[in-house]
Amino acid sequence: MAGNPHDIQPEEALARGIWTQHSEMANGELRFRLKHSDGTAYIRTEATNSSGWQKSHYHRTVRETYIVQRGRMALAELIDGALKMRVFGPSEICTTEPNISHNVYLYRDSVIHTVKHGEDGSIADWHVDPSLDKMTSHLTESEIGLLSQN
Image (cartoon, rainbow, N blue to C red; front, top):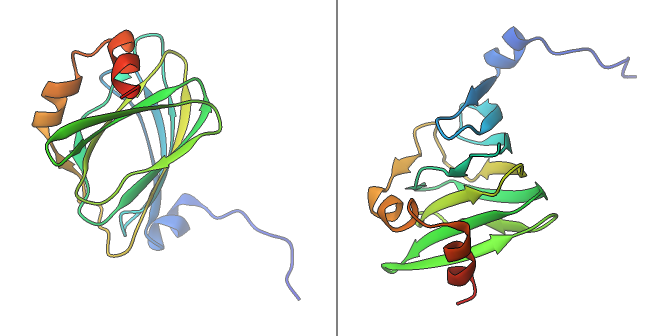
């Protein structure tokens, strides 16, 4: 018969390949992460008044599922050389595919949850794509809105 649950201390979690990592990003976002050595993770991201675009990247095996809790987020993807833009609001969910470059824009004071999942992932499965940054980093919220209607 199981007893009462006990708290798992950070040292025990780390021995199982799990740790936390919290950061304030260059764009002002606050990220609170629970990570595993297999490349999977949970991230709560809180936007500020000046957050905006993240950094364009892709994963070879890991998918990212985004859940919007509050506010809005735009997901830009580079598919067959073409920019695809979608905007999501509260309670909406989207998932990226492996080897598809993507970038996220968080509207002011938004909160999203990101779940990184997939088989054979690794902590190093994050690959920069400056070509998508060039296509997105200058876009304003009104331009994002126009592009997401196509």
